[in-house]
Each structure stands twice: as structure tokens, then as C-alpha cells.
Length: 225
Image (tube, rainbow, N blue to C red; front, top):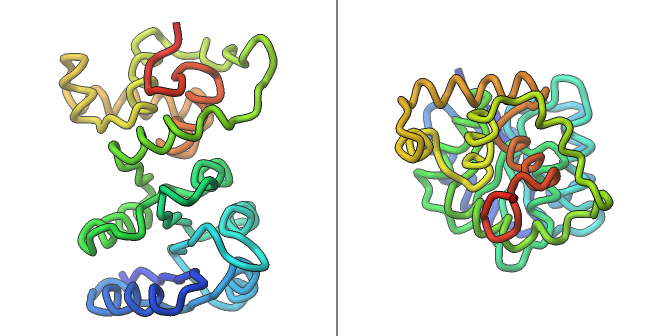
């Protein structure tokens, strides 16, 4: 099955580079390109797409708002945010808007291709090291919910599930969580699945967002007291 990809970036040279990498893959095809979010939304009305590679900073309509509008549609394609990290202050907002993950623009080609395939298959792409760096930097920018954070949602979870959720939010993979908690990787996967079901979350990205918003994990990567 061929993965239909849309490239959304205002830099033509970057789109050209990504297109060359993707065109060499037997299971991928670049079916559309856009120079900003507004153009991307317009093209999606007539072009079937499976995965959108979305830049953040663009003219007219930025990648965050474009992601929000795209993901709000029924049968929406998956969105993978591409960020320079050090410059983009909106990547976290992109995840909240519904993106299935993010990658750095200078990611090695093999990792980018793997991320596209993972997102297409329904998984979320949350690179552990960049997740911790990004959220440590930008989680203080989240709006305050008042004196008492909305932690009632987390009462649906067992103590072990909350522990697993905290480690997911810190960017650990299932294997790393298994080693930390002395569990099998299959058991960790089961816990993650139950967390998604109980909290009505789509993927690991939403787990990360909710963990920070509820105060389960604080800026700096540590668990809340």
C-alpha cells in the first residue's frame, strides 16, 4: 500500500529535499505540496492524503492552526509536525492541535521515513530525547487552570498506570519504561493501552499533553509531588 504524503513548507528547497527522499521509497508518493497552511487545506479538499508533513512557521496560515483545522475534519490525514526546535515556540501547540508527533527538520532520512510509516500505521511519533527537551522548555507556557489542576481525570487510573503515564510523558519508550519498572515490554504496552482507553486519548502524544496539563509531570521532566 502506497502512503500518500503532502509536504507543507514555505521553503521550496526543503520541500525539494524531502520529495527526493520520499520519491526513492517504493511505498511512498508525494501527491501534493503547499507553501502555507491555507494552501494545504485547500488542496486537501480535492487530493486524498494519508500523511501531512507540516512546517510550523509559515505565512498566511501557520502550521499549528492548519493542523487544528485539518485534524477537526472527519477521516483527516495524520499530521507530522516538522520543527527546527530551537526557533519554533509552537511545536507543543501543534501536538495539542492534533498532530500525531513531531520531528526535527534535520532528522536523518531513515528516521523521517520511519516516522511517516509509524504515523500512517496509527502510532504516534514522540522521540524521547526531543520530547523531554521540548516539553521542559515550553510546558511553563501552558495556560494556568487555576489553583487546583484538573487531576480528577487521573483518578480513573491505577497507581501503576499513573506511574507509566508519568514516564511516557518524560519521553521514555516502552522498553525504557519496562526496564525502569522491572516489567515486560508487553505489560507496559498493555498499561499504555488502558491509559488511552480510560482517558479517551488518541495516542502517546495526547498522553504527554494531558500529563503536563494536569500537573502529573512538571517542567524539568520530574513527577509532581
